[in-house]
Image (cartoon, rainbow, N blue to C red; front, top):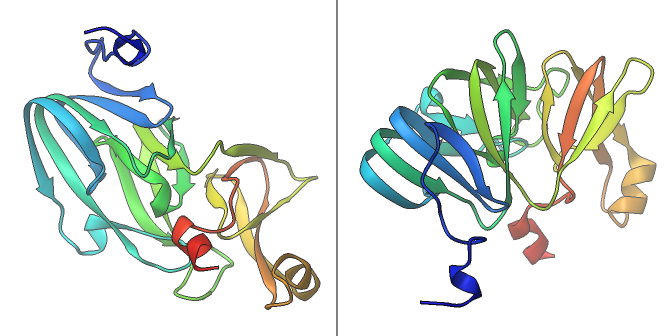
Length: 225
């Protein structure tokens, strides 16, 4: 069989080591040797001796989705083999979480992660209750975290001199040392939302990084307008 489809650009090569790698811009490959976790429905292919098990639907078994508070069900993958994960052809990225560090991330952007990572559901400090509450998931420990993002994300440095204001629908995640609060602006809301109401931005202050996606609305929201 010949043709561009069967070129080295698209052909999967054997895994070089256990763990997570970016297969291409839209897909993460995980060479499983034991256990890992992923969002339910994200597995697009696998080979080897792998078992997939849904995690419980309690707080420990799902990640909260920012603003709406919806849960993101997880599954555990066990055994030995390779699995490929993707979500709606979104772009994929890998974050290395180091010992002693924490990374706060929106549940909708989580694709898969090492079992060595711990996560907890946290209300964003300073956010109070907005809509269904502003919930994010905080990852700690040591391991790799696979994320998805609509388009190419922006990584914006935050310094004490320059706090960053982010649309609550656009924020992907941020590093642990940053402090959060909410900023409301009727005038900006009138300009950006056609006068439909006040805009709410998440303010991040301190020293670190914030990750932002180049879209302020989820795809299903965009289709409704």
